Length: 280
Image (cartoon, rainbow, N blue to C red; front, side, top):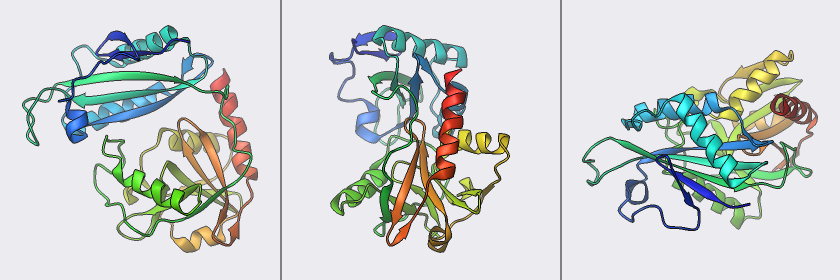
């Protein structure tokens, strides 16, 4: 397999330099990104990724490249997948503001890059061992219009992941500035109580995850009740299951939060539904 990068519609070998050091994504984190799963040589959930990306571009006041439509988005991604000969993998689509300037940009014209990486697992698979987690106590995420988008400023999540690593944990739970539990350092949060799914509301500041939406839709389509609501630490202790979701890994179930232990029955059911929905 050879690795390739698409920069504004032109394919380059991935081991060659393609960006200048004065790029605004590097200097200021001025942009956003999408992580996209590839299964059987096909990128999954492109409509949802396009919707979030284009909405985020509007919020950041980044103008999409000329002629870059939903159709062109899909064509560019398919070209990178085909050129890199990826059957199972992940893509990173990065949109950033071009040009110079400092905090005040010279213009708002956007540029993009698509990177491709292969994965071993042919499709989504539930983790064999449950994750060990705790609540990250050092910082809280502010609730604002940026909260639900995947901007290039990921320092908050990196700090949370470093805290988990230092304590031998697999991940951690993040809180908003009101004290509600909203997500993990690498995905959205769901809890299961008496067969019902609960997930934090977008109004509480969690990421508007593509896989979060897929899980909600799959659950509702199969008669599983879902509620979007505020969650607190007491809800974690009362739950039967707890799992995280993201577009690359699907569902990852949590085995333990402090002294609390969880099952993963419904997480397994939803993973099977997800595999079926992405294999056709």
